[in-house]
Length: 74
Image (tube, rainbow, N blue to C red):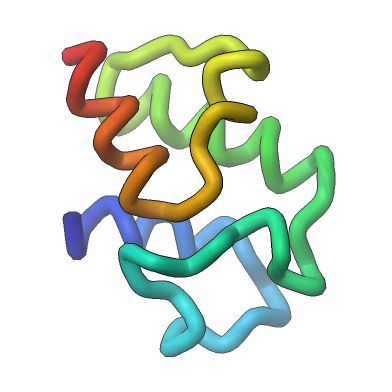
């Protein structure tokens, strides 16, 4: 989980890394955009060999929910 959070946090340039935790509602981050969504999907595919659809990602609200979704597809 910590590795996932670190990789997720690395996608962001302006958000302080201590704002990221399993309970972080990532869509509520000021910096969140459609480009971050695409970068997140790309990171998941490259680092975890899981190809998520955008619709699947929309089901996750927190980083933990996204992580759990990725792990369920491995």
